[in-house]
Image: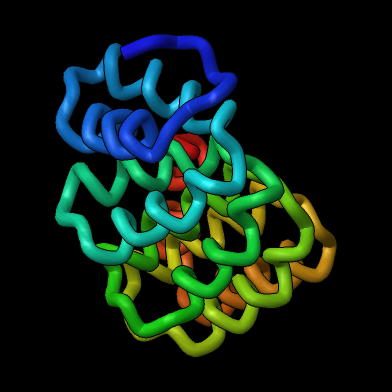
Length: 162
């Protein structure tokens, strides 16, 4: 597979997506960087991989989407706030935190308020801390008061791991 990003064909895109999903870690990471160079055309297929994949494949798609940056924010917000369950929502939240766009803050606050899954709430709170918005941090602090020291410990553990 050529690494020249000019003139990438759909076959190249499909090949890169396959390497992201199925390659060894080093090859997968290189393919993620190549997909970033492809640009907007790669976002839709990566979102589909996040929604339809399983386990590690979803996380690899999220890692690739995080590298896409701003172009992936709106689709990731849609995925994170949808009803895909932890297996889909958690990697999307992680990717949003790593992109760092403040646009995600109100959506993540809403998710934190309504989500039933402790795991998802913990990852969402950690993402809000990473984004650093005062309104998001205030909501996390409110959740600390509501859910106690164990919850705060889990959030800080997730925050340090993001």
